[in-house]
Image (cartoon, rainbow over all chains, first blue to last red; front, top):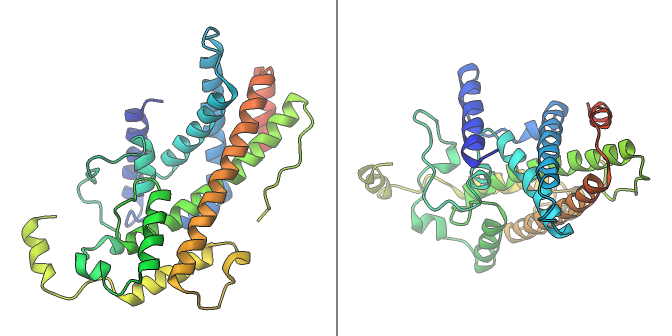
Length: 195
Length: 92
């Protein structure tokens, strides 16, 4: 799936849902639903089979283990970002290759979440200890596309990102198990704590 | 956001209060695994941020490990369409 396809799909989902529901704020709780995980798993399997087919058809460029593993990881992240339906900064950053060189223009009429309201530079920096400021910067680097966000928006993005990552881990673990079983290989015990 | 609108808002109080930040912090604390910070005790903002960073890093590591396993499985398994169907049925 090309980047523009993925962005288009994510935004199209967002637009379609907005017609049915009020507001388009990110809903972190959805990541914990079974339905969401099922949809994600299905799309990820499609993506992985495509990755596999494309690497199989180019035998001259035998990818190293590391490269293959990175491709899987990237596919998993892309599908996760698409599932976010364009509503969060971190997901848009992933679809655009993890760097937002310009602000992504939001679609007209998309209501901004309350925490994205204007914050003066002075207010955002006031009353923050150096420790908090430093850790805020670290967090901004860990969440895709959120390097320069003020703290309130960053906290919202981080919450959603964490819930999405947790779902991703649950889904990937289950997929690993399923591929082990289907392939007939003995599955090694996973070290993922079940919820 | 027009420049004019920004300037007029700058004169007033900040729209984001400490209370709102505290609220977001405790929401984040509620999302983090209980073992990291507990549920009810008030924890400093710095601690919440630190544990958040640490947790995200551990999730990233877990994803790297899972991706590695999966890429090995994909390369060694002869994935026929029948087996792909088995995989789906195990998951859905």
